[in-house]
Image 1 (cartoon, rainbow, N blue to C red):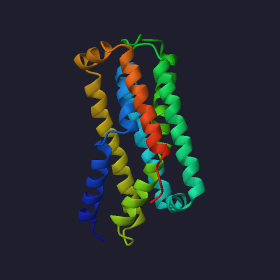
Image 2 (image 1 turned 90 degrees about the horizontal axis):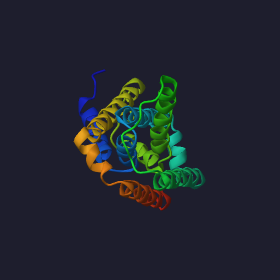
Image 3 (image 1 turned 180 degrees about the vertical axis):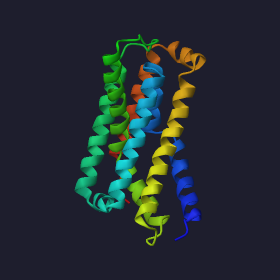
Length: 210
């Protein structure tokens, strides 16, 4: 069977447009880039990209349809996501002004890597809009006749694309001149990011099934 290049291109384009629209993932990578460092931001980006594999897997297995049609499951995911964003907002508002990070020992770095990865993973995983987005993508843009192996390839490409995008975001916001500009904001950076997470939590909380 020939590879469905036209279908693949349409799917990747739709996913790319959604990926670059600022949301919770972008806000998290930005905060990690300024409050932590490039390494933390890249591990956060990897967590977000890994979460895409989870969304893609349950969508291909048909679980996404169940969540998308079940009001109870959707609301559980919605309120868990909103609560997580509120927790991130409180943590941001209570944090000291961002300063250049102090290099610690190797074991501490490894723990920080896993913590950064987990932040990105949960930020994307607990977004109920991601469930509906993946369901809509594969329902409208992927043919029912497309093979399972090709669909898995689609999901892998989405994950790699998302990591590449947020890796670029991480690199940009961890350049010295950009970071210094954010450092000069002091506590205002924490206030703005905290308020941003609260607004994102509200947006998640009012999300409706379609």
